[in-house]
Length: 503
Image (tube, rainbow, N blue to C red):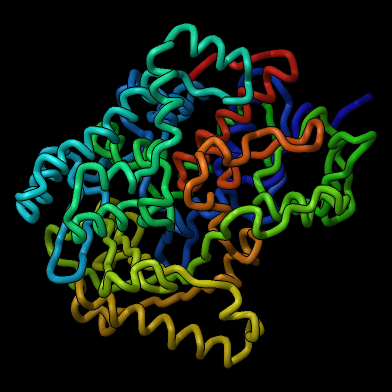
């Protein structure tokens, strides 16, 4: 049978683009279809009135110059493999936390400096602080020593286990541990435990008890090794570079090309039908859509439907894209901030404010004497379902809620309301429309107590249909979906008879 390509990828999110790039470099032909006019999904940039805004993600791991640092340095390894450059700027502080009762915690790249901030606030917990963060360090050391690959690839698992028996066993045991329960074996102070909760919530949108220790080891230890780096030109530089790598090796990325259906032939995924009616066939199909969008929308056979309650549905976001006078940003202001007014509401809708000002690092993102500000809070699509796009009532509701977030943000940027030049608001309906994500959600989360290995992997119940992105192991966040793309490419390549070389 003549195929349109060896592999078709649905969605130009970071997971899908990573899988396509590595497969294409290995010699497989790929076509990636993306409904929007730009790649990247929530890791994209857009221009508006002279400003460049990050659509979503803005904290990036995996760009260390040290290629020896294992699976946690995936971006450097991937772009070196592709022969593509992504200039970045190191960020000395991952996140500056502004918490109730004047509790301020900048998370510095230098681990001892960060721990010193906690120890000064909680001198009676010094031993517990050091022991807990050493647990995360241990997870990091194990992960960084193992090559990236699919946990479903038996050959890979056997090879890694044979070469690293001690580390493999230790990692397997740690998959049963929770970040929060581990913290509670060392720490008793409730305020400090709340800080550890917000450390988890900052990327996982779950408290620490609900967050697997392995995920914490990935996100909270690597910041003190590889560090945080911001791509020059904004987050869109990452998907742009992946597209460059795909095309360099002969692959195709088709923008403005939405997929209507994954069609099945004799029980296997045979290819896709686009919204314009065109049909493309392949040996394998990779979906970068959420688990609900893949099996409840793109796969038409109801036998494969996935109930919403099979996983916890993560919230969506209300986002604020602001252009401001540069004078509002003081000298020494950090790029990324999290603001919590009330511990009892931090995990409620809108309870935590996420805030970034990336033009502090990269002035090219804003006009002269201006800065870019991106703020967002959790939200739910049901709060907006009664509105229609373009209606005055919808606009007024967005303005009212957005202005309330701006006023709260003035706790760390006094006078922000008066410094605005550009103001764009996006609701969960916006996320749903642009990203084709079920209810605009941040994706599926595990229920408390579930093992991280219970997260869906790259294979699916349908032969030759694979998955990547935040619906798959290890979960949410750019570095996590990058790993899922590497894992998916590794698994598909072996199934198609030409295994990848390990990163």
